[in-house]
Image (cartoon, rainbow, N blue to C red; front, side, top):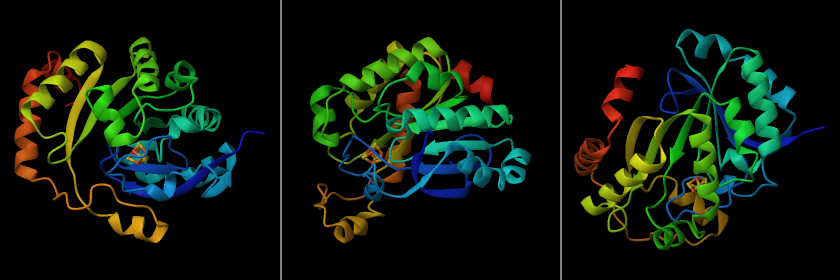
Length: 249
Ligand code: SF4
């Protein structure tokens, strides 16, 4: 029987897809992002073990809230793609119940992407960096596996919201935005929304508790106004963005 491990469930997610979302935080992530707020989800063996059916029972309790708002369920983490079988079965159960599904991912998982995307209405895709060297510095891994997910995403035509964390001194230049725009234009034709997220330091205390060194020690939180300016600049460079905005508004 398929089982998976989850960290927690949030019933009132407002930024993890359209409408009110029930957000399932799953255990396990192969990346080690320098700014990660959820290092307690990294360990695949942590959290609580459940079957997809047990998870659905928990999700069903919140259905009246998210259904009324045009929302649904978002699988987040960690990275939900690290538990592909459990994720797939859970997505299938959601779709059988007519629930809108989203996955919040960096695209760095363990395969079966085509099948998973068949049951996914929306991907919240976190682009970590624009090149392999930067990717290694920020996440500890290279971009090879992400490219496999991007290929599957293009085949699937599942809609995408792109996200990117802006870290002062690392990912906050105009040139950086130009390169992200290039990636979106060339590799992510199904984009409906682009969000830049300013780096912040909430959650840093988790590192102390877990005894993990925090690698961005001394980096100031990203200025929100500058983040908005960069976001507008990025959006202005993305070819098919206006059309997609029409579609979701
Ligand atoms: S992909 Fe997400 S969960 Fe994994 S290390 Fe990066 S920020 Fe943390």
